Length: 328
Ligand code: FES
Ligand code: ZN
Ligand code: ZN
Image (cartoon, rainbow, N blue to C red):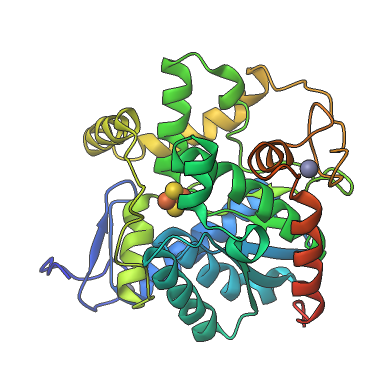
């Protein structure tokens, strides 16, 4: 931890961080409190969680989702919601084992209930093999599989919200990328929450919407939250996103608070971006959300295995959630 040689602006302890957009130094305890309060006001500002909600947290093993879980856990009593976690084990050699062990530690340190969904147990193959068979880049198959299984897990578990760990830097880079590529429909999906659609989709929330990436990193370090050390072997950084994040951080350094004012104005204007007015037709195989009557998971798996695997995934998840009383 870098020694700043300054005192906390709120007490006399040693400062561990300076927050330029607040012009404040914080000691460890006051920084932790500051970040918890920031998430608390994000939840209130965007009405992300209601009393008695059942919030399912998507834990990946990385710092953002772990910090989100830690903070939501601390806020759950105040807001009166229940919390549980889900992890998708993609069966990627080495990396997935490490990720699973880390999320188990993350859940254990909070005493939170965790369900691990194993792709291998549903399809008989892991992500690497699946993307090879699909002849598609692993990251694109990964995104599709995770979106499908997380939504299905949330539905089957009876969750009323699915919490995703995207931070402010992620959202801002995605939004600028959407603007530069003029993918305006994509931008319309970058709000702090989405609505639930009866029996088809559980509303998603982004509690770290106003939290800087540097803040989640520091919070995880200060509280010694275990996080995955290695990188997914399939990970290929999106060069445009990386460069945009660098530019955003340069501007933030010149104009502290720019990211925050961007995101707040962005939310006010998001209604002007053309949304996706696709039809909503339940998948004829698994009954999940689709726009054509065949969801992308069933379409992909039917092409590869000759059989849509959505119904199998549904049965698997039902068995999995039956044996664990998740919301106690
Ligand atoms: Fe999805 Fe690596 S974690 S491809
Ligand atoms: Zn202090
Ligand atoms: Zn389907």
